[in-house]
Length: 150
Image (cartoon, rainbow, N blue to C red; front, top):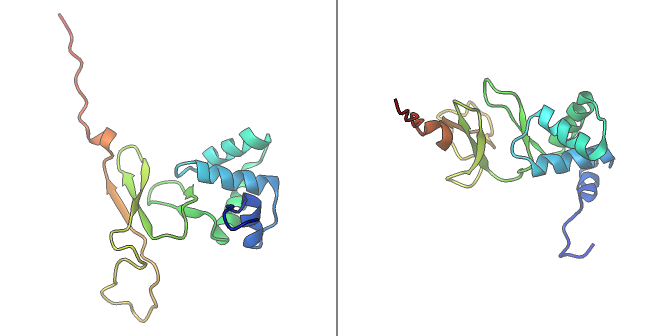
């Protein structure tokens, strides 16, 4: 591989010490092509590529990918876990209170941790997880009532 070539998904898996399997390759690529997908949607994406795959295999694959740092798990309170391939930067998330859509937002500070605790209680803080809550553009736009002719 030359310096200008990007590593393949298989290379990335090997680079973090994971065994390369068709399921892991399909799962990692599905996470990266998706937009904060849940487990069911990820399983569906992997099935489209490979055929039958169990939900348990998807959960196990996600666990390995998250532990290896290739995938990030996001679990806003009251929502099922979702997964993204954007890792290694300090970004946060916006969540719509109405429809649950989730979007990335870059950190205003840039470096981690972007917030300082008023009292760190002796901890060495290296990360702050921020979730912004509100209404997405679709949900915050008032519905236009239908005009009916009588």
